[in-house]
Image (cartoon, rainbow over all chains, first blue to last red; front, top):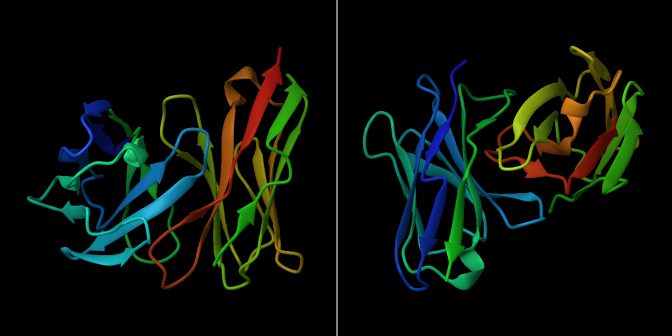
Length: 114
Length: 112
């Protein structure tokens, strides 16, 4: 069964440094998403991406965040200058078509900011 | 904004019993509902979904019930097994929106 893959599984970064989290969505999917889950809390939406542009973003997704689909397979989340409060699990998800379909999630990247 | 809550943060059941996990939501414009299972160290895994034009949907050992009148969603797991132990989230989608609202999760523990 096709799946969403994320790398790395764990990223440790010094505060103030840039970090790039990588995702390979399911190959025929068109809608891509990033979510965040702080330890012990619920999953929170960050951003959605379709047709090479952001379609929606939450208040969490401020100017320090950016997303990119640099080629036909990868989808990345960049945090420009990390803060301690950015420590969380970051999940990538994808969906095939518009409308009522479930989003499929990767297993996440654990980001630890020191 | 949307608020999604669950009635219990934890639920313990005996192996073989049925489990019921509940979810309440506030936005009546929500029209698509999904249950996800999250095991330790993993991402949310799709279990079952239901559209707002339905009130019940069944899968393998799982049933989702939707009561739009009281804005309530439940997940029933039949003959619960140790492998069902996980955190369960309800998530809401809305036509035209491009994001899911997740509930806070219920941790299900199956006692052998």
